[in-house]
Length: 147
Image (cartoon, rainbow, N blue to C red; front, top):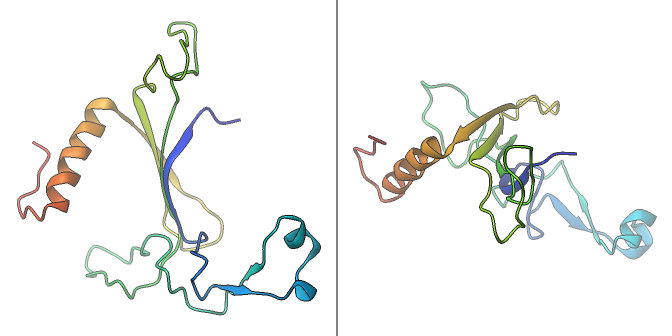
């Protein structure tokens, strides 16, 4: 069991209901497990994604990406909730203790169905620098830097 709680996730398999990748099926055509779960949609992998699920697949540092490029893989950021304890840091309860000071980021490039992603842990200082950079980048700052 993982001690991490997913805070954000972009995954190429999680399409919006309005996406062409999901097709509504009649109850007569639905599998029993779909009916039991109350679902009425099935995946239609032969259809092109129309919702932009998942990151754009990276094709190299020499290629300018496009919103029309293929999507695949995943990106997620997770944290350890404050109620998780260890011997040198007892838990006080979810509301009484902030999350542990590490953010786990996971990236899968989406080039295969194997999900052979890479995982890294960032400490609070690194997350603060990333936060500063992303804020400047989102604001359109052409000289966005963390320092």
